[in-house]
Length: 77
Image (cartoon, rainbow, N blue to C red; front, side, top):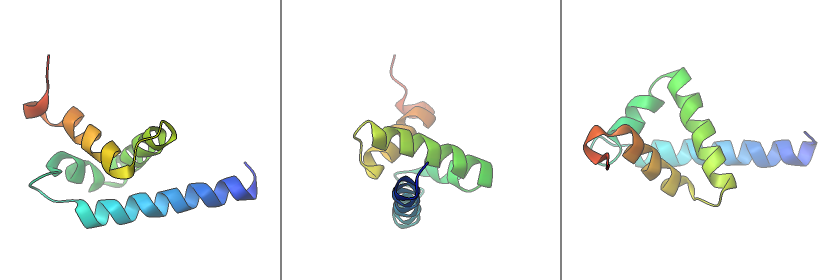
């Protein structure tokens, strides 16, 4: 990975951290917040969001998708 790619990756990780810190709450993103509360869970969430960003999602869209996946009340058959 070249220096430019590393910088882009680090900027994306900083953005993810700031969005999670700003928008994490028990009302809308309870399960994502629980996941992000541990180091292992946060890394898992970060990797998920990065993969979704590569596919064109915003950080908030990726968080919303992850919340829908984790929340048993939002599962749809």
